[in-house]
Structures are given as C-alpha cells and as structure tokens.
Length: 250
Ligand code: C5P
Image (cartoon, rainbow, N blue to C red; front, side, top):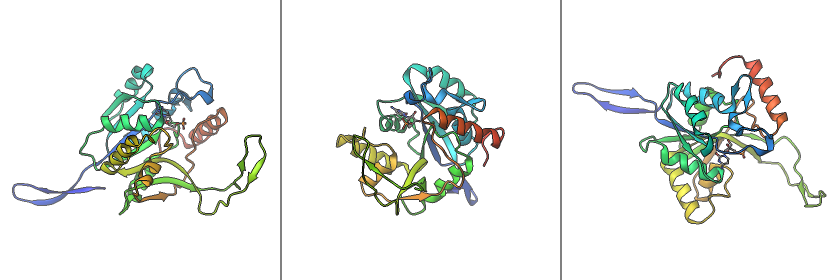
C-alpha cells in the first residue's frame, strides 16, 4: 500500500491511501474474433471481457480511479458497465492504435496519481492479486509488467512460409498486461514517442519506456492470463473463468 505522511492539527501519522489509476484499453475492433460487437463486449462465462477486467480493478484497494478507453461508436454500453462500479470510472473514446488509446486514457486520468496501470480488455483473467503483484514489482524501477518466459522453440519465417532460422529463446519473455508505471514517466515516454512519430508502432507501454531508457521489471503472473484473439482463446478463457467461479479472485 502506498502511503503518505499526514500532518493533523495535533498528531502526525501515516495514512494509507489508494494511489494508482488504471486504464483499460478496450477500443479495438477484434476483427480476428469475427464478432458483431467490439471484442471487449464479447461475453465469456456470463459477462463481457471488459466487465471481467473492470471487476478485478474495482476490487483492487490500491486503485483509486479507472478509465475505460472504448470504441467511439459504443460509449453508452461501456458507460452502463462503469456506472455499476464502486470505484470512479471514466469512459473516453480511443484512438487509431492501441498506443493512441493509451494516450487518450492518460489524458483522462487524474494528474495526481503516482502510478498508472495499463491493461488490455482482451485479458479477462486478470485478478486483484495480479494487480497488487505488478504494482509491488515496480520497486526502484520506473515500471513493471506481467510476463512469462517463452516455452516454445522460436522460428523466424520468411514470407513464403519457409523457416529462415531458429532464434534462441534464452532470456525471451512474452509481455502481458497489466503493466504498471510511475505515471509521470509513462506520460513522458508517450510524449517522446509521439514527437518522434513512433507512438502508433508500439504494441505495449513497456516498449515506450524502454525506448527512453527507463527501467522496467518483469513479474510472473502466477496464474493463467491469456489474451483473447481467436475463438479458441475465447473458449479457453471461458473454461478457466467457469472453473474459477463467480467474480474475480484475489
Ligand atoms: O488488437 P489487440 O488485441 O492487440 O489489442 C490489445 C488491446 O488494445 C485490446 O484490449 C484492444 O481493445 C485495445 N486497443 C485499443 N485501441 C486500438 C486498438 C486496440 O484500445 N485502436
């Protein structure tokens, strides 16, 4: 728990306060899923992907406010979900790429928050325990991300489908979300990437931080944290959510 010193009229004590903001990026179309609604609104085990994510952040005591970045044509559906949360939730329209949508979320986030979490709505298995673990992972670095070491043997494949070579997987991890950062550091990294015309190419926020020399640590999620891209992913996630039972688990 982040703390601040609080000087009262006659006492000096430490008070614990929620000090992080969360951005859930949900403005993608999810064309690869073939659904007639944006991917974030596709249901798994009785609720939409974004609703599972929102429940996990809403249940995280260190999250003071949440921004959902939604497709501009679907804001009312997202606002209806937001109204049911205990944590204050803003819903704002997204941009052309994921990184543009993160920038939209940062603009809507309260400026006083020390840490910002960025999460893909496509990862509905996120739990409050994962949120706490990634925040704890920041330590003396500028950020931390959930990530797992790669298990498969890697192949670089030429356009015709033939294997060019097999890069070593040693030291390679697959990046996940949530990703947590010192908020001002992420704001600076986004501004720098935008100024150099490379914001849109970033597929995660950590790479923006790495590009400006900021330190970011990896944290093992400790439980499945799949990203929904295909209908097979959706079936897997649905099975895992059903086994888990109702609501996010810590
Ligand atoms: O497309 P992909 O699954 O990699 O997107 C990762 C996340 O970024 C998804 O949750 C998606 O909704 C979000 N996104 C966004 N704005 C975009 C593109 C993707 O918020 N323009």
